[in-house]
Image (cartoon, rainbow, N blue to C red; front, side, top):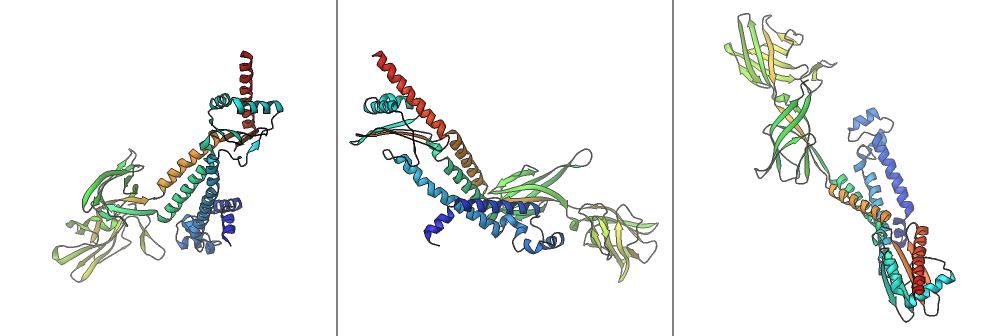
Length: 453
């Protein structure tokens, strides 16, 4: 394709319409296809189209090469359309004596033509005054060939469509930048933990995490007191709450949820050998402690919501402590005397235990685990561009609708009748009526002045 053909293609209105339709169709598809899931999810839930979802990137549609390519091509179309229109509009503002491109002539009656001839010859000041009262900017020029009267107003409206285009260009550019370079990072921090933010020169430390409750026991709010560290120095400290993020160095940190670090659970166990012999001990998951007579007790695992699957394997149904259980092993010398799951709140449940003596018993009396705060760190480098583009878009619409560009040109060459040319992008009939009204006002004033004489 030659350069002229490529330019015509990129500035085509048909191309813009086709791209808009394709973008809207893809965006609609993206609302029905769950985003950012594992491949197994689509194979299981969307077996009919899973073969298209992954190859076309429909699982992350708004960052897929297909979607971004269409948006980028639409961006080029807007840019080239604007570049095609802007030079002509600047030339219009600079042109004082040449005929207006795309102007329309107002058909004048013979009497009106004679008035124009007289005004152009002897009374341009009066005509200028009439137009200036209607907020026109007037310029009069005279050459050996004749005279020209030029009145303009609403020049911002002349560039209103270009401002709209520029706003859309900036919005789309901001969207592309966000789609390509935005970050979403999930941080799970326990109190005192410091995490380096990937790609940044600072770290985040959780100093304190608290959960507030309503009287009925439901969660009211989560609060995370965090510190921003640079070179091990605290630069900023702030409490993050739901809808009250921390913003620092182009990133925003949101409070998402909370949880418990069950791998660091502290267990309180009671060991009963007989009615007269028992002992309470405290140990962490994975820790081994020594008891009297060479016995050893080890906490192997902890599950907050105990359940057994079809294969007999224990797992946790949720992260909440709905049915807590600890896997405990006890040995005396080289002999294992107890192995099994002990349940908090259900000490009688011995189905998942193996022990050597009927009186030997291990009870889970209490447990506690450090809570952690789940924060989401996000950066959206295109946000400021989107806001700036939105502002320009609004200004362009306001200029187009409320400050329409209008131009009136009276021109008379020596020996020829005067010509009245007008230009307006919208409401041309109303503009012609306005011009006729202004000329009528000038005519009435002219007649009145003659009567006074």
